[in-house]
Length: 302
Ligand code: HEM
Ligand SMILES: *[C@@H]1O[C@H](CO)[C@@H](O)[C@H](O)[C@H]1NC(C)=O
Ligand SMILES: *[C@@H]1O[C@H](CO)[C@@H](O)[C@H](O)[C@H]1NC(C)=O
Ligand SMILES: *[C@@H]1O[C@H](CO)[C@@H](O)[C@H](O)[C@H]1NC(C)=O
Ligand SMILES: *[C@@H]1O[C@H](CO)[C@@H](O)[C@H](O)[C@H]1NC(C)=O
Image (cartoon, rainbow, N blue to C red):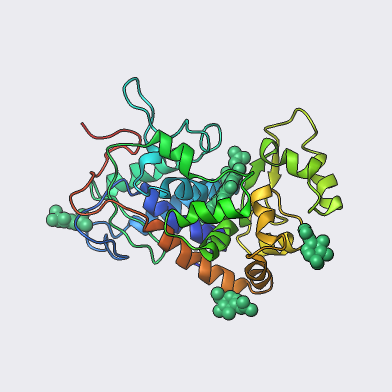
């Protein structure tokens, strides 16, 4: 898989399996959870992601981010639609008009259900599979527990620590911004007002993100937004981080050494990123007889 895909697609495949999961069985997570009951799982996910990303490279980034936003919880709760009597997480501040890719999850889920009815589930990297889906969602937690683009370094470290993740985990997981885009509204203040920024970079971004207006215009997180490489860290070292929360990782603080390391050592970054994704994916997943295996990712079973 890795040999024929860009690294970003590889990571996607891995993370999407968890979201799609909407499912499972007993006990612990394991990488071969579906080996017997749904051996085509990885192929289906890979195939749909291949078609999707061929059409729209950014969708790789969008799916990766969905995993993060679900995982400060890690139970598929982000996939549930709001109804008259149910408040999900899709309209919580960090997700509203921002989280995207739900149709891709639906497309994968439909095909997996057809191939392996009701066995879906899981999570993947050497992905520990076997997660079950929540019957609830937590709007307030989605608002309070996810960091904001204006967070300073101490806040980022504390918010990840609250989930059992170290400062180093936080810095390597921020490398998720190796792919994808942010809307102007989240980096306007940085490019117009901050001083720890390469002036040429600020000028480039201002062209598409003026002082007022254009709030939904997109800016790439790094110079190679469709490749999952270590360019994100190289950019931070050059003071070309897009969000305030990106640049604080390299601003004469405790994470400078790690950023420098990853900026010159892509292999170290990729290896540490995979391990940290597994760790993030292990934040309180439902297993055994907890939760359920949803038939549609968007609604709890009756
Ligand atoms: C460290 C704290 C983090 C903050 C403050 C943060 C904030 C943001 C913001 C504001 C956006 C743009 C959203 C928009 O324009 O609507 C974004 C996009 C993104 N984030 Fe993060 N993020 C963080 C960590 C992470 C982590 C841990 C991952 C995954 C491992 C991740 C993956 C992504 C991706 C891939 C995108 C681009 C999505 C797309 O293009 O559709 N982020 N993030
Ligand atoms: C996607 O599928 C096409 C056609 O089967 C194949 O040629 C290509 O290598 C695949 N791309 C990835 C990234 O797997
Ligand atoms: C696989 O199918 C068997 C027989 O239907 C079932 O007992 C078992 O729980 C399933 N395993 C998973 C992982 O869904
Ligand atoms: C970091 O420290 C160096 C050396 O003291 C200084 O030249 C530089 O301006 C500082 N950078 C920031 C962003 O504070
Ligand atoms: C760079 O990161 C790798 C992987 O985490 C680690 O083994 C190595 O010691 C780090 N190097 C430095 C100079 O921090």
